[in-house]
Length: 187
View (cartoon, helix red, strand yellow):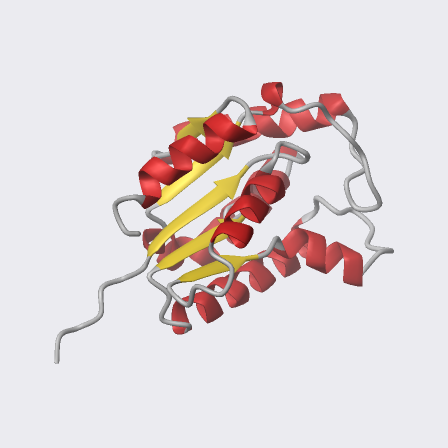
């Protein structure tokens, strides 16, 4: 019996309100009911919706809980035997947020916790905030300046860590077109 190939896993990362969930919703509709595709929802939104009074949302404790939930969700996606996994964020988001908040030691600790998992990603797509107007909601409450600061922290993280990524820019249609190109290798 042939060993099953690892799934293609593409993750949309970046700061708040840059179109990650909107982009994933396009694929949720496109692949509705397709067992070959598994979509992993944003762990941070789930965690902070379930824990609305969380203080220090960008601290190591809260982000460590978000990271653990993201890892759990992604592991379940791998167990589903899907050929393609699309993720709204990743296990590195917690690292970036903690580091951007000034806790270098906490960020390194969170990174060490998930280093074993990083090879499961085929593509990190960092969404560009300049193409998407900023809006707050019940979960997303940072200022536009904070949003840009977190984007800069992502750029710095990828450059420092040497983890390959692609900056995804443009309209929703342009972003979908690029993701379709990436997925065409597998679907």
